[in-house]
Length: 196
Ligand SMILES: Cc1cc2nc3c(=O)[nH]c(=O)nc-3n(C[C@H](O)[C@H](O)[C@H](O)COP(=O)(O)O)c2cc1C
Image (tube, rainbow, N blue to C red):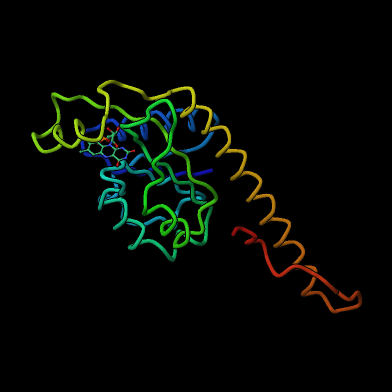
């Protein structure tokens, strides 16, 4: 199982989530590439793709959105998993569902979206960013939940395995359907891509 993990990060904490997720996926037997969105050439060699972004002012970062635009057609053909990292205002309650996520889900046909708590290092921020954080009540600190990130890896591997099993069953049933129609295939399925 080959999985691509690609995440947009401004100050590095989301990139570290991507790296940790990649390691956890490898622990579960997947072959994983963790690549920044702008550096991904082609997604067609992957069985599944994980796309993430830090959230700034309620939006995904541009490299993640451009990645989705560029690869939308290929992404729709395979399981896709999305994650966002934030929030700053209510760290104990992952909220602030970014505005872009519903569009990204729609464009990719993604299986799911997860929100992970992020990290705020005031020293790393620009003056404007620091002002925004102060005004929106954000608290500095590292709120990333590595257990939650690692736990998601197991769910991803399970979901991709199930999708592959479904695809194989679909291919087999399609092959059967190609045999002279001595048995009517009433109500038969039309292929393995049952993702929404
Ligand atoms: C200026 C600024 C705006 C932010 N806006 C949001 C936001 O709207 N929603 C949210 O959940 N998190 C927001 N955050 C929190 C970041 O998403 C969080 O710090 C994240 O971990 C940063 O990821 P990065 O280090 O990969 O850039 C904001 C942070 C900053 C500095």
